[in-house]
Image: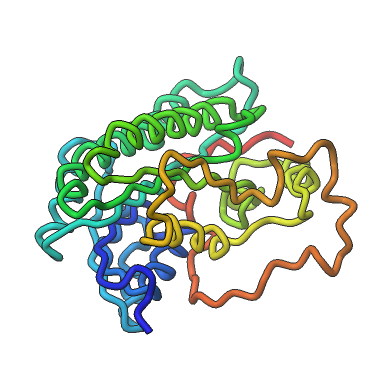
Length: 292
């Protein structure tokens, strides 16, 4: 049986780690041909090799997609390699610091804007002419923090709010050309970003993040990737301008509701994807760790 993305060509940015790695494997399992993009130092080549080991077809592009020429070259690499483009997944982004706004590092602010905003704009701009030809779609990484804000990283939440608004604007303006645009809005997911050992969170933040989630646990990259696959597929042909929450109920919860979930319901589902880099997303990044 053909997969839901059979023979579609997709660019996945931030494909070397975390949710991006899971999207790559999920899309490949559903039959997509992939251009996997990552920053220098990201294990995108390893993910590409793992996809190929399981019979998938993928190529890589290494570069900084916040730079105009790198973004343009990434889109062109997909066209040169596969002859078309059906799906753009704007997954790349950073979460570099935790601090109240008066203490937030200005260089982290500027770096976050470049990676979270400029890359999304540039990739969308350069991909659209090709997506119009295939009546393709864009799926971008929003966040629950783009809806409700994020204390101690107001900058990150603001970038995701921008992506939400940008995606909805693109959805309306591109609808006459057959192009859909949607956001996947994860809550706390089991990646580098939600663990004090690999990201900027403190132990208290790590604990309260889970406690404020209605399901009482972190989500998995694979759970998020499944929603990306649906929105990229023809099954979602009547879905555009959507902000699709995959957040364990954190946006509707009030207080420490996660503490009421019994232990037997807190276990993450067993993985079906061969993920190797779920918690490597901030490796080689300039992370500012919070003081306990």
